[in-house]
Length: 201
Image (cartoon, rainbow, N blue to C red; front, top):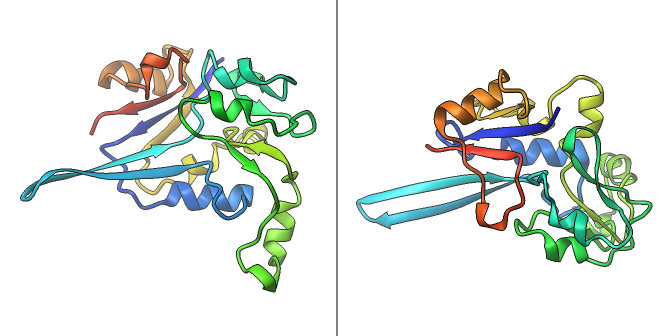
Protein backbone atom coordinates (compact mmCIF):
# COMPACT_ATOMS: atom_id res chain seq x y z
CA UNK A 1 0.00 0.00 0.00
CA UNK A 2 1.19 3.50 -0.89
CA UNK A 3 -0.96 6.30 0.51
CA UNK A 4 -1.46 9.42 -1.55
CA UNK A 5 -3.87 12.20 -2.37
CA UNK A 6 -5.58 13.60 -5.44
CA UNK A 7 -6.60 17.27 -5.49
CA UNK A 8 -9.21 18.24 -8.07
CA UNK A 9 -8.43 21.82 -9.10
CA UNK A 10 -11.81 22.05 -10.84
CA UNK A 11 -13.57 21.54 -7.51
CA UNK A 12 -11.28 23.64 -5.31
CA UNK A 13 -12.87 27.02 -4.58
CA UNK A 14 -10.16 28.48 -2.38
CA UNK A 15 -12.24 28.45 0.80
CA UNK A 16 -9.27 27.62 3.06
CA UNK A 17 -11.25 24.78 4.66
CA UNK A 18 -8.18 22.55 4.33
CA UNK A 19 -5.95 25.21 5.88
CA UNK A 20 -8.15 25.89 8.90
CA UNK A 21 -8.99 22.24 9.56
CA UNK A 22 -5.29 21.37 9.45
CA UNK A 23 -4.48 24.20 11.86
CA UNK A 24 -7.22 23.01 14.21
CA UNK A 25 -6.14 19.37 14.01
CA UNK A 26 -2.45 19.98 14.64
CA UNK A 27 -2.52 23.21 16.67
CA UNK A 28 0.46 24.56 14.76
CA UNK A 29 2.07 27.85 15.86
CA UNK A 30 1.38 31.18 14.11
CA UNK A 31 2.87 31.22 10.62
CA UNK A 32 3.06 27.43 10.35
CA UNK A 33 0.74 25.91 7.74
CA UNK A 34 1.06 22.23 6.86
CA UNK A 35 -1.69 22.87 4.27
CA UNK A 36 -1.66 26.06 2.21
CA UNK A 37 -3.53 27.47 -0.78
CA UNK A 38 -1.50 29.47 -3.27
CA UNK A 39 -3.55 31.98 -5.25
CA UNK A 40 -2.44 33.59 -8.51
CA UNK A 41 -4.14 35.58 -11.25
CA UNK A 42 -3.20 35.14 -14.91
CA UNK A 43 -4.06 37.14 -18.00
CA UNK A 44 -5.07 40.70 -18.76
CA UNK A 45 -8.51 42.15 -18.12
CA UNK A 46 -11.09 41.15 -19.23
CA UNK A 47 -9.54 37.73 -19.96
CA UNK A 48 -8.38 37.00 -16.43
CA UNK A 49 -8.30 33.66 -14.66
CA UNK A 50 -7.46 32.73 -11.09
CA UNK A 51 -5.34 29.74 -10.15
CA UNK A 52 -5.97 28.09 -6.79
CA UNK A 53 -3.25 25.61 -5.86
CA UNK A 54 -3.56 23.74 -2.56
CA UNK A 55 -0.16 22.45 -1.41
CA UNK A 56 1.12 20.18 1.34
CA UNK A 57 3.93 17.68 1.87
CA UNK A 58 4.06 15.43 -1.19
CA UNK A 59 5.23 12.30 0.68
CA UNK A 60 7.64 11.49 -2.13
CA UNK A 61 8.81 8.01 -3.10
CA UNK A 62 12.39 9.31 -3.31
CA UNK A 63 12.20 12.09 -0.74
CA UNK A 64 15.32 14.29 -0.73
CA UNK A 65 14.50 15.35 2.83
CA UNK A 66 14.97 11.76 4.00
CA UNK A 67 18.28 11.42 2.14
CA UNK A 68 19.55 14.75 3.48
CA UNK A 69 18.68 14.11 7.14
CA UNK A 70 21.90 13.27 9.05
CA UNK A 71 20.15 11.67 12.04
CA UNK A 72 17.37 9.64 10.44
CA UNK A 73 14.69 11.86 11.97
CA UNK A 74 13.12 12.32 8.54
CA UNK A 75 12.05 8.84 7.55
CA UNK A 76 9.54 6.70 5.69
CA UNK A 77 6.77 5.54 7.99
CA UNK A 78 4.08 2.99 7.18
CA UNK A 79 2.52 3.04 3.71
CA UNK A 80 5.11 5.47 2.33
CA UNK A 81 4.23 8.39 4.61
CA UNK A 82 7.21 10.69 5.11
CA UNK A 83 7.40 11.76 8.75
CA UNK A 84 9.75 13.33 11.31
CA UNK A 85 10.79 11.79 14.63
CA UNK A 86 10.91 14.91 16.81
CA UNK A 87 12.99 13.08 19.42
CA UNK A 88 15.74 12.44 16.87
CA UNK A 89 15.59 15.76 14.97
CA UNK A 90 18.44 18.16 15.84
CA UNK A 91 16.97 21.12 13.94
CA UNK A 92 19.82 21.38 11.44
CA UNK A 93 17.50 22.50 8.59
CA UNK A 94 19.10 20.06 6.09
CA UNK A 95 15.70 18.59 5.19
CA UNK A 96 14.20 22.05 4.72
CA UNK A 97 16.93 22.98 2.26
CA UNK A 98 16.56 19.66 0.41
CA UNK A 99 12.77 19.85 -0.03
CA UNK A 100 11.99 21.35 -3.47
CA UNK A 101 8.42 22.13 -2.38
CA UNK A 102 9.12 24.31 0.70
CA UNK A 103 6.66 22.36 2.83
CA UNK A 104 8.65 22.12 6.08
CA UNK A 105 8.82 24.48 9.04
CA UNK A 106 11.26 25.00 11.89
CA UNK A 107 9.63 25.38 15.28
CA UNK A 108 12.06 27.80 16.89
CA UNK A 109 9.72 28.52 19.78
CA UNK A 110 6.13 27.82 20.77
CA UNK A 111 4.49 31.15 19.98
CA UNK A 112 0.83 31.88 20.62
CA UNK A 113 -1.73 33.96 18.76
CA UNK A 114 -2.40 36.51 21.50
CA UNK A 115 1.08 37.56 22.51
CA UNK A 116 1.39 38.83 26.08
CA UNK A 117 -2.10 37.55 26.90
CA UNK A 118 -0.63 34.07 26.72
CA UNK A 119 -1.89 30.93 25.02
CA UNK A 120 -5.54 29.93 25.15
CA UNK A 121 -6.44 26.59 26.77
CA UNK A 122 -6.83 25.15 23.26
CA UNK A 123 -3.35 26.33 22.30
CA UNK A 124 -1.89 24.88 25.47
CA UNK A 125 -3.47 21.53 24.73
CA UNK A 126 -2.45 21.42 21.07
CA UNK A 127 1.00 23.02 21.15
CA UNK A 128 2.19 20.82 24.01
CA UNK A 129 2.91 18.15 21.39
CA UNK A 130 5.20 20.46 19.39
CA UNK A 131 8.77 20.30 20.57
CA UNK A 132 10.90 23.43 20.18
CA UNK A 133 14.01 23.40 18.02
CA UNK A 134 12.78 20.76 15.57
CA UNK A 135 11.35 20.67 12.05
CA UNK A 136 7.65 19.97 11.55
CA UNK A 137 5.43 19.10 8.56
CA UNK A 138 2.29 17.34 7.32
CA UNK A 139 2.20 13.62 8.09
CA UNK A 140 -1.16 12.85 6.44
CA UNK A 141 -2.70 12.98 9.94
CA UNK A 142 -1.25 9.63 11.01
CA UNK A 143 -3.21 9.76 14.28
CA UNK A 144 -6.48 10.03 12.35
CA UNK A 145 -5.46 7.27 9.94
CA UNK A 146 -4.85 4.96 12.90
CA UNK A 147 -8.48 5.60 13.90
CA UNK A 148 -9.73 4.75 10.41
CA UNK A 149 -10.35 8.39 9.47
CA UNK A 150 -9.17 10.44 6.50
CA UNK A 151 -6.74 13.33 6.98
CA UNK A 152 -8.44 16.43 8.40
CA UNK A 153 -8.03 18.40 5.16
CA UNK A 154 -9.84 15.65 3.23
CA UNK A 155 -12.69 15.24 5.72
CA UNK A 156 -13.31 18.98 5.91
CA UNK A 157 -13.15 19.92 2.23
CA UNK A 158 -16.70 21.16 1.50
CA UNK A 159 -16.36 20.74 -2.27
CA UNK A 160 -14.83 17.23 -2.02
CA UNK A 161 -11.81 18.40 -3.98
CA UNK A 162 -9.49 16.06 -2.06
CA UNK A 163 -9.53 12.29 -2.42
CA UNK A 164 -7.25 10.11 -0.29
CA UNK A 165 -6.32 6.49 -0.83
CA UNK A 166 -3.90 3.84 -2.04
CA UNK A 167 -2.11 5.08 -5.16
CA UNK A 168 -0.50 1.66 -5.64
CA UNK A 169 -3.90 -0.03 -6.00
CA UNK A 170 -4.94 0.29 -9.64
CA UNK A 171 -8.59 -0.22 -8.64
CA UNK A 172 -8.68 2.58 -6.03
CA UNK A 173 -10.51 5.85 -6.63
CA UNK A 174 -7.31 7.88 -6.52
CA UNK A 175 -5.63 5.67 -9.14
CA UNK A 176 -8.72 5.76 -11.34
CA UNK A 177 -8.88 9.57 -11.24
CA UNK A 178 -5.16 9.92 -11.97
CA UNK A 179 -5.50 7.65 -14.99
CA UNK A 180 -8.80 8.99 -16.34
CA UNK A 181 -8.07 12.68 -15.89
CA UNK A 182 -4.32 12.74 -16.37
CA UNK A 183 -3.23 13.52 -12.84
CA UNK A 184 0.03 15.44 -12.61
CA UNK A 185 2.51 16.25 -9.86
CA UNK A 186 4.41 19.41 -9.01
CA UNK A 187 8.03 19.77 -10.14
CA UNK A 188 8.33 16.39 -11.88
CA UNK A 189 11.80 17.47 -13.03
CA UNK A 190 12.99 17.04 -9.43
CA UNK A 191 12.49 13.28 -9.77
CA UNK A 192 11.15 12.88 -6.23
CA UNK A 193 8.09 10.77 -7.10
CA UNK A 194 5.41 12.80 -5.26
CA UNK A 195 2.28 11.04 -4.01
CA UNK A 196 0.09 14.15 -4.18
CA UNK A 197 -1.51 14.46 -7.60
CA UNK A 198 -3.51 17.26 -9.20
CA UNK A 199 -6.37 17.11 -11.67
CA UNK A 200 -6.46 20.00 -14.12
CA UNK A 201 -9.33 22.51 -13.80
